[in-house]
Every structure is written in structure tokens, then in C-alpha cells.
Length: 162
Image (cartoon, rainbow, N blue to C red; front, top):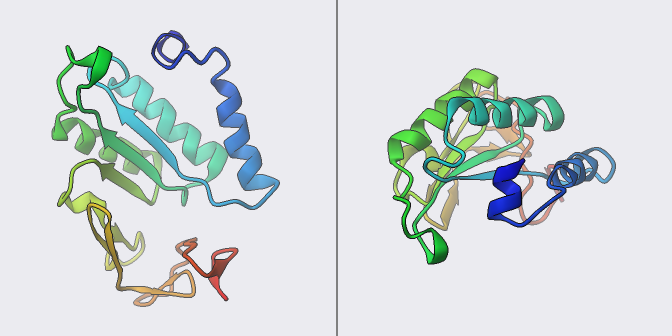
């Protein structure tokens, strides 16, 4: 609680979580969660496990979780960039929690930028930074094994193409 109050000046941050749940459940919106991992502030196992478990329990295992690399800036220049090993550890925590789509962000070229099918392991979306190439998706399903991937893309409605 104090982390969000001090860093983001948000006193009722749990309301943000409630909005995410409502957006998905009531309005059928696509929701993704981004956690900017800041060394010494929110990078311990207990916090990361709590976030991963909340995403799974409240938004579902197919909800994407982006664990992003922090870079020092402005009033936080005294902190180091997030080590890539910390992002990889967060990725592992997300997998152990049962999340199907976990991405390391702000690390162009890292293998976990890509989307692979949780069922067969084949490449679905290839990414490098902001460049994206869809290679294994058909009607929100893996074109190789047919697993439902719950994807929404431009021109799609409710996870399916128009």
C-alpha cells in the first residue's frame, strides 16, 4: 500500500484493480496487466507472486501479464535498471501461478517478447520492440493445435475476426 501511495501518489489503488475486473466482466473488454518492476521497491517474490495470483484469480489465466524493465529517470535516478534476470524470475513466477501469456517488456529482442501457444509451444506472434508479426493465429486460436488463445486484434470483435 505504501509503495503506491509514495511512488504514484495514489491513495486508493485497489480501485484500479476493481476497474480492471469490471471492465473484463461487465463490459467484455480485453484487459492486460503491466507491472513495471523497480529494483528494491516491488521486485521481491512475495509481491510478484501476489500480482501473478491476483491476475490468475481475478482476470483469468489467459490475461496477459507484462513485466517491464525499469530505467532510472527523474527522481529515481539513484536506482539501477531492472536486471533482466529479475524479469525472467518474474516470468517464472507467472508461469508457476498458471498464467499463459507473460511478457518481458522494455527488453527488445528478448525471447519472452514473443507469444507462443501455451498448448503446443509454437510461435503465434513474433515481436521486436514495437514491430509485430502474427504467424500462428486463426480466429483467436492457435493455427497449429487449435487452442483458444483469447486474442483480440484490430478488426476483431470479442476475440474473433469480423
